[in-house]
Image 1 (spheres, rainbow, N blue to C red):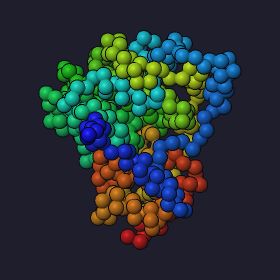
Image 2: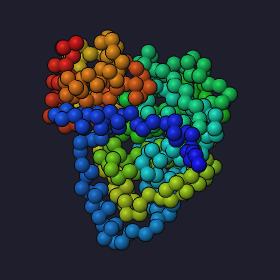
Image 3: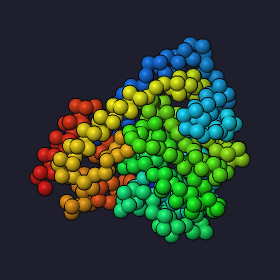
Image 4: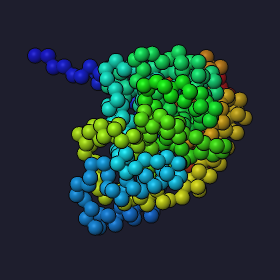
Amino acid sequence: MELTLNKAVTQVELSGIRQFTYLVRDTPGACALTIGEPDLNTPDSIKEAAKAALDDNDTHYPPGNGYPYLLEAVSRYEAEQHGLHYGPSEIIMTVGATEALAAALSTIMNPGDEVIIPTPAFGLYEALVQLREGVPVNLPTEHNHYQIAPEELRAAITPKTKAIILTSPNNPTGCIYTKENLDAIHDILKDKPIFVLCDDVYRSLVYSGEYHSFAEYQDMRDRIIVINSFSKPYAMTGWRLGWCMADGPIMDRIQVYHQYAVTSIPAFVQRACVKALETDVSDVVELFRKRRDYVYRRLVDMGLEVQEPEGAFYMFIDIRKYGMDSNTFCTKMLREGLVGVIPGIHFGTEGYMRLSYCYSDADLKEGLDRIEKFIKTL
């Protein structure tokens, strides 16, 4: 008797980012600059809110989409902070941004549908599309300062195109789409039956200039799905909390997937979510701005090519001049230099490496010292 599994699952590999991170972790003496997890702890006020909820025995089934008070808080926060107007019934609290993305793609996709993914991009997108028997269509941007070239977007659209995923600030580049670029994207998509997934999880971590999300184009409200997360700005990665917003008819169907996949997020953490939304993160932004400036200056002084990030906490470094693919380069640097970063191939772009600067100042200095020492041997 032969047992078979879902062919989509058998054809998708485990996260290359995590696999390389495990390799770094298992290398004695290595300095890791790999994962996008702030070195900060969750603020005490947020933790106290969760503790109080536990003490009040808020440990029973909550409403599937989230408690009304939390949905109202998110609705108010998005309106006041971002100018996005979604009612409580158009919001679902999710198990991180990952579940929000999975729920959204599961709702809109059918087998064979194509999803445009501007690269470099977080590897999760490609995997989720493949798990839904869809076709990821990479749209390279590294030759255009990580902005989307309108003519190339037009060329990527086919009758099978179901959606495009826009991440700004971007992981792994820290790039922010300009208003001019977003206007051009909007002009191309406004009359097409194509969904736009706005992964805005880093929008609170913006260092300079004017920020705009594609979600602001509300003439396309019926096709826009907005995803956000508590993980990055509030140092709540382990809490696994996020939210999804969409026009009523779409959200009515997204909640079906959400209900059967996870039922709901935990009850007692929801008070903590409200407290997080009330928390000022300007000091966190300033901390990462200083780290960005330090890391960028060090890399440039080493002679490495990198575009200064405008948000998030990553550097995407060009290593093509060394004549090695990114996995070979990063593995060699790990073994010989004892410092770990993520090969660019895991973001769909060869010839680069991603360095995360959400580590401590001491770790950043040590890691950069080791990188500098290593590249002098090449």
